[in-house]
Each structure stands twice: as structure tokens, then as C-alpha cells.
Image 1 (cartoon, helix red, strand yellow):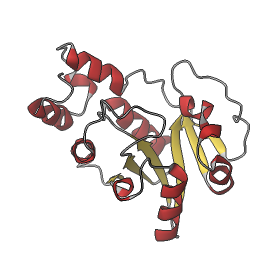
Image 2: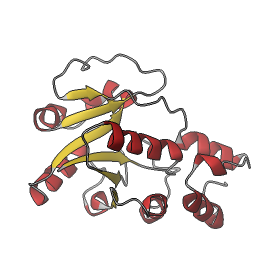
Image 3: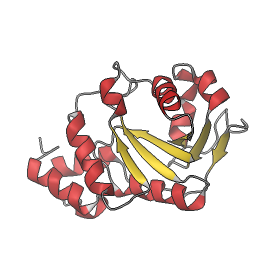
Length: 191
């Protein structure tokens, strides 16, 4: 079974994340998508990050009726900051019958050579790359383990949603309904 691993802080999850996951599932050879909620990305500031369990709950609410999507808290139990290579090694050892593929935006491909053990990742795993605004070409674009997926360009971002909420704007149609309602009930990102 080919499983796409969609890593992210999902702070918060939004419809763009789900659109990309849906596109990958329907227009590639992936059979399932696992949303890996990252406790701390080594390249991001943790200041505006919701606690892990809230972000996991937002994802679970967003995908609760989709049996081909899985929310994972695997990195919650791992050392921090979390590194993709460590998570891949753990998953591959635990589920040797599954073929794991990294799903990433083209913006991440630009910094990929800064990732811990990026060469080992490319030796052992495929990368399915979707387009992100402002990122067209990358140094690794011709690598045989990297496949560019012609997904729609999604310009929604978690940072845009957080900023809009702080400015008291209504962003209900940018997020899955249950996730949005939980976020509003908990008053996330309002200050």
C-alpha cells in the first residue's frame, strides 16, 4: 500500500490542506493520506503554535468521515524538534508492508537540502511535490525520486487565517466547518 505522508503544523488546518490531500489521493497512485501533526518544525517559530492536542483535534474533526485519511500524533512522542528522517525510519520499521511517500509543497523543496539527512530521504523515499505560490523551479526538480503533481495552486495559508482571526474577520469558509467551530469556541488565535 502506498501511503502519502502530509507533514505539517496545521496551525490551523484549512481547506487548502484538504484540497491538496484530496488531489493527491484522486490524481496520483496514493491509496491513503496520513496527516502527521508536527509538534515543532525546526524551521518555524513556536510562539503562535497551538498545543499539539488541539491541532490534532482540529485535523481529526476535519477528516472524521474520510476513511482514506488518518491523523497521526506519532511525532508527539518523539524528541523535539522533530525531524522527518526520524519519523520515516520509525514508520518504515513499524509498517514494513507500506510504501511511504512524502507530500510537500514546492516551497519546501527549496530548503530540502537543509533537512537532516536529506540524502537518505531521497535514497529511500519518493517525494510528491505540489505547487506553491512563487516557487516554480528548484535545484532538485530532475531527481528521479521527486515527482511534481500538477495540483491546483492553493493560496490559502494558516498564517493568513491566524492573522484574519486576530483582525476579527470571518474565515469560516476557509476551514472545515467542525474545525472552524471548535477553533471559535476555544477562542484560538484571537489575541
